[in-house]
Figure (cartoon, rainbow, N blue to C red):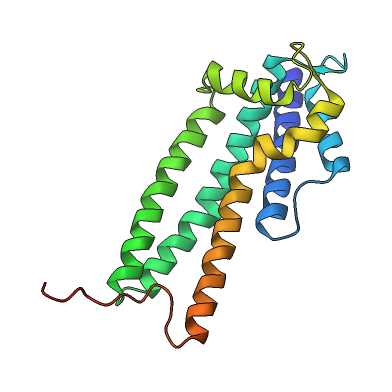
Amino acid sequence: MAGSASSDEQRAARHRMWKLLSRQLIGGLGAPREAQLSALWSRYDADHNGCLSKGELGMMMADYAAARADELEAEELPSLQRMMEEHDDNPFVRSLAEARLLSKRAELELYRAQSHGALPAAAVEAAFKQLDTRHDGRVFRDDFLAHATDVFFGIQMERLQAMKDLESADVAAAQQGGAAGELEEPKGR
């Protein structure tokens, strides 16, 4: 039983690391730094052989999924719910928020399933191939440090950039006399 408690504590520590890295990215503080990725590496290279196995990578991906699920549940979904309530009088904004909320709920379910072991072998294999830059069936520490940000945070970084682009377009439209997102009803309807 003591081993189980230790294992639970280790998983909780890994989970906290992922959560902090994700918050750092979302908070605009940039991608994980080499020292942070090195700390992750040391948590997952369980046998300390200098290579990340597919099993170790699968554990890493499951922990990342658990951290993202918690983040979605605690922060992103409530934020979207508040947006819907605040813009109840604007059907366009409400409709967009509802669609985003449905999408985030589906994302939450996917991450929850992945965090509980429903991680497709093909997903682990795809991530492994991205990290195996030498194409020799092994992921070394330097491969991981060079590509982990893209593998784990690429989608989040793309979404954050898209949100910044939308905000820029909104500001530009407001400066030109109208707000982005304000649409006129088509004539003849």
